[in-house]
Length: 283
Image (cartoon, rainbow, N blue to C red; front, side, top):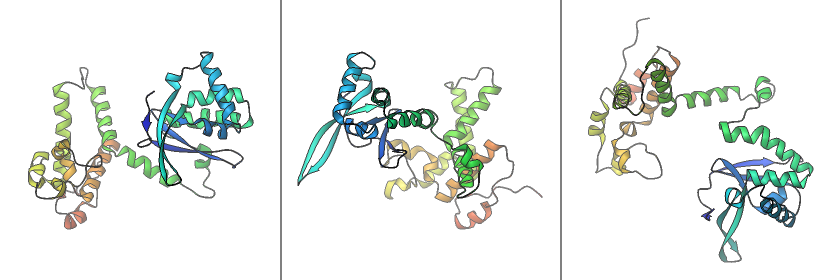
């Protein structure tokens, strides 16, 4: 693989050996983790030269290919008062495990077990859970925090529209996500949500709030580090933080089937006039 610079290397997963003597940061990129030869040597408690020999044998015997399991990373290090740029080879999880089987150390067995039971779940599913610890409230109890994080994930816009798409697909015999009818349907739903929060349509909201004389066109949120052309045409990017919370709450109520509208709307409307007050049902 071609060299890449040290920036934007994705998540770092901390792995601590069972004896607690060493800890390694595994770089998560392209759906797998990567380590240098020196880090693999530390992981399996052996020498870098031994790791080099095992990798050479793995590639020579055709067990793995360098193109699929190795890539170069350009790193900048301080050596005295000079900045030195060096190219370092990184090896992915397949190569790390292949070396681990050959080293045959206690550390290797521990890491393979951890990679199979924990790391694989994280790479595939995006989460890892200790079920027994969550079932036992003794000590520090993070169950409520877990529920709150799940609620936040369920209320995300992408998750909301996935639920709507699933419902649409289940109730429509000729559903086509690329059809103009489907796109119009989802645009209408988003427009209705904006109207429920602000009392204006998405187009009216953009016209009223887009202001080239103000910083960032008066946007309150956008993806990435800087505003792009497409950001100014998305109505939700003009909502205040409080209005965005209510919008997420509306989406959550639709997902869960709860008919009660957020009770905090009248209070928020007094402090944030851009939030429309939805009619409350008679008790």
